[in-house]
Amino acid sequence: MLYPIIVIVVLVIMFLAASIRILNEYERAVIFRLGRIIPTKGPGLIILIPVVDRMVRVDTRTITMDVPSQDVITRDNVSIKVNAVVYFRVVDSMNAIVEVENYLYATSQLAQTTLRSVCGQVELDEILASRDKVNIHIQEILDRSTDPWGIKVTHVEVKYIDLPQEMQRAMAKQAEAERERRAKVIHADGEFQASAKLKDAANVMAEQPVTLQLRYLQTLTEVATEKNSTILFPIPIDFLKYFMKDK
Image 1 (tube, one colour):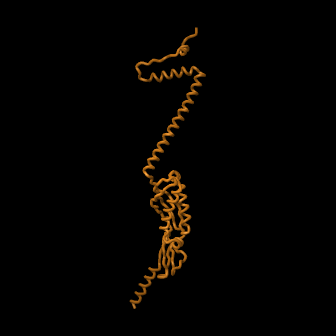
Image 2 (cartoon, one colour; image 1 turned 45 degrees about the vertical axis):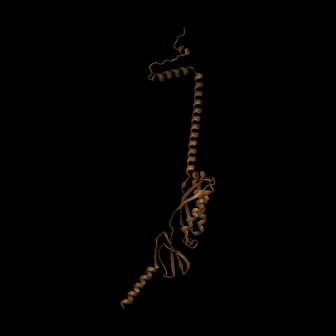
Image 3 (cartoon, helix red, strand yellow; image 1 turned 90 degrees about the vertical axis):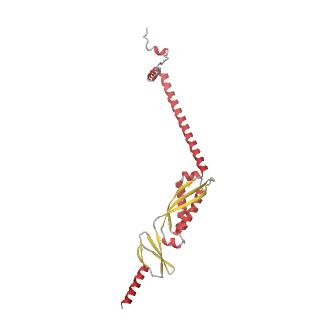
């Protein structure tokens, strides 16, 4: 009598092991029953019918996918290498399994072709200066294309742009020339402002001749602070009349 009981217990344990599944909070189960799909289950404890049911686990967390470097020729005929990172997650587990064979591989391939297509439609300066716009454009195309698969692309970021050595040297020369141009403009603007101030000062001195004498005395004071052995100061005749008494 003991042997049949042991057999029954073993069969029950095997049945439970084959039929009971536990899914985490971020997992969903797509179940095929005799080849037909049934409503998605999970998270928590689910029970399958052995042999009849086949379960596919789907992770609904955000997936970070690195897009390999792609050779791109921009609209202004510059050859560059660009790579990116794509953030997406599964929002419809059933479509992710039924509508596409491998949604991870499909999303990766689509991201690579989209990256080449978008970067090839813009100029290099736009990629470097307006990277946010390029990111948003790629994200919109990927999100629209993967929507039938139950995939939601949340963010795309162009990570690295590899420029040829010739282009790097040309851009360095361009940046240096731009800095020199700005320096010359700033210097010319300073000269213009200084000349305007000198003109104002000259007008004041022309109206008040005594200010010229005060400026002369100030210059003498500044020169006297220098450690010179002999200093000759020309004194204008008009300056002496302030020290002469009227007769």
